[in-house]
Every structure is written in C-alpha cells, then in structure tokens.
Image (cartoon, rainbow over all chains, first blue to last red; front, side, top):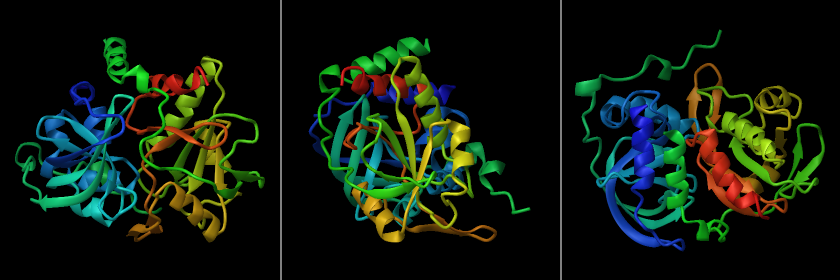
Length: 148
Length: 185
C-alpha cells in the first residue's frame, strides 16, 4: 500500500510539462512500474535497485511498462528507449533494468502521467542502488514454474 | 481516501488537454482476422470505441496486467452506458491461433476479441504502434517468448488513438481517464 500511495504522489508531483512536449535531460533509475505503483512487493524502497532486478526483468519481458524514476521522485513512463521502438521487453530495456542512467529525450504530460521518449542514454552508471543489502533478492514467484 | 487522491490526479491532469491530439505519432491501419474468423481493421464495425493491446492470449510466462485491466475497464465503462470493444493483437501467432484465443480472452471479458494474421499483416500492425517484434527470451520448456506491447491504446471507432492507458493504473483511475475521452465524443 505504501508503494501505491508513493506512486500516486509521484503522479501528483508531476512537473508542468507542456502537452506538446519538452526536451529534458534527466538522471534516474530504470524501474518496473507495476511493482512500483501497485505496492504488491512492498514499499517503494524495496522495488528498486538490486533487490528488484530479477523481478524487473520478468515484468519487462511480460509487457509491463518501464519507467524512469528521476532524482526528484518524478516517474516517467518510457515510451521509447533509444533506437528500440517499444521500450519494454527488448534488449535495451532488459540491459538497463535497475540501472541508473542519464537520459536525453522528449517529455510529455497526458492524463496526469509523465511520459518520455528517450532519444539517447547519455550515461549508464549500472546498478548503483544496492537495495539487496536491505531487502535481499528475487521473489520466489519471479522464477517461472517448469512445464508439467 | 483513494477517491480524494484520484480526484486530485484527474484535476492535476488538466481537463483542457483532455481531448487534445496525442503529441506523438502512434497507430495506423491494419487488416487482420479476429478469433471468430472475421476480417477486422483498425475501425470497429459496430462503431464502438476500442481498447487495444499487443500481447499474448495464451501467456507462457508471468501473466500480463493489461488484459485483466481491459476487462475491468470495459465492465466499468458499461456501467456508465459506454460500450467499448477490448481487442488484443497477438505477438505470437504460432501460440495464439484463431481457434485457441477465445477462451483465455473471454475469461477477462466476454466481448474480448483476439486478432491474428499472417506475418506481413501483423508486422503492419506492429509497425503502426511501434511494437518491436523480437524474441524476449527462450524458455527452455515453452520455446521463444516475444516482446509485448506495454500500453493499452484507447481508440475511437475509426481507430484513431485518443490516449494511452499504462496497465499499472487501477481500474477506477483508468475508467476516469477513459471517460474524459468518451463521455462527450
């Protein structure tokens, strides 16, 4: 539940982006938006960084939108990530899951949600948020069941 | 409490922009076949607004959040006397066939339609919505699993995309977003 409210607050904290878009350069972590907003995996601190890396990979591969959690707490839903058309599930998204990056692109606001089309990842700092030290790693249900 | 927060979200969304055109290009024509065998394009033959997602009906991995939300959203809009058609275009026509899509999709809502087609027809749809069609990973038991779309597209009856609905919203929030576009067409 804390994550849910944190997510809602992130919505509310949305900067006043022009509807037609605004070029921004932003630094933050590539996150799994389902677990971040829903709170199903715990509070917002536990669903970012190294503690959530494996789950973030599975969510991305399963079609959950990825987001960029900026340093000011704003969450941008990523529509495109560099040369890759769909941001979710592909090589670039899986490679950058849980990484802290500096991205350059066009930001849009619609229906209270922030979106970003990342034109270039300026810097990839890797996974620097070592949350596994506090929250351990890998929820068991993120490991697929073998075929019966 | 949830209602208060939801109201604040919608207020912050800026109603003046509620029906402005999307500021980025997405969508376009496609010609596929639904799971009943009927030809179907981006235009709804019954003149209904549509909810569109690119994914799996027969999901080999972790189940998507999008299909349950589309079912809930369709049901919630019906309570406001707004009929919409939930539609899913498969990203894996080898696994999702016209014969086997109905059961898993109608589990989420009886009006759900699954669309498939040959490789060229599907590729046209993928390209229109910027859905990369690539292998996400090889499951040792189930074989290749393809990348999904990650957003639900709210479209009008002609197939024009009105707005995006990320499937991380709860049904009430998604319903209120959709109502902004569908209440006064």
